[in-house]
Amino acid sequence: MDLLWTILAAVPVTLTVTATSFAIGAVLGLGLVLARRSRWVVVRFASFATIEVLRGIPPIVLLFIIFFGVGSGAVRFDPFQAAVLGLGLVSAAHLAEIYRGSLLAVPNGQFEAASALGLDRLAVGTKVIGPQAVRVAVPGMVTWAISLLKDSALVSTIGVAEVMLVTNQYARSSGDGLTPFILAAGVYIALGTPLAWLSRALERRFSRVRRAG
Image 1 (tube, rainbow, N blue to C red):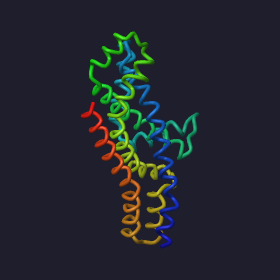
Image 2: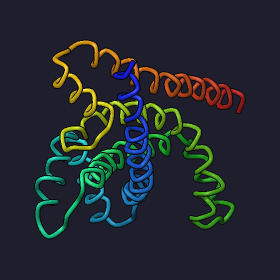
Image 3: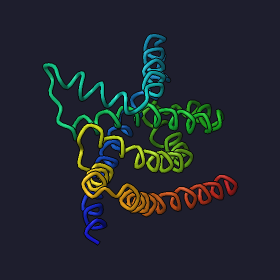
Image 4: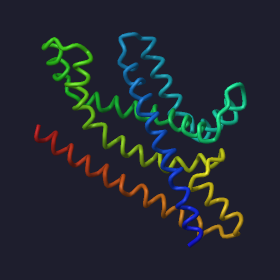
């Protein structure tokens, strides 16, 4: 029972890392996808290259680059800051692609109709295209949140006291290499399952809305 409470005590850190990284990624990803749609070729290429690089680097490698590389120089990061920055950058790249896919799912006629009405770009994005794209993007965003929750275990490698770190420490001190990790797996399943249900429910709901439309 002590082991379970030890693991559960680290859950808030895991959730905070996940939520903060997701929030950073959601904001930066929006900037990246807008840059991908820029009228300037250089901006589009820079955005494309950034997304591909961030998606191509394994998250644990990026964490090491930020914490042990960048963070050992003039700029200092504590483990939590390095964790949310690293996972936030990875999230930005993946969420940018989710956003881009959702925009591509909006029929071209919607863009043409908005243009015919003389709406400015802000109005088109917030009142016409944005609401339709969000319905497509949300299930994918929730799915990514589940993946990010699991990837948060990687931040234990740089010393963030989340579920995996305390589990590994307990396993080392007790000599039990099975029970702690089984309990940790159960905790991750318990945290991720509601999100999986939410993703499927949203996907069904938005599919009905699209068919009705």
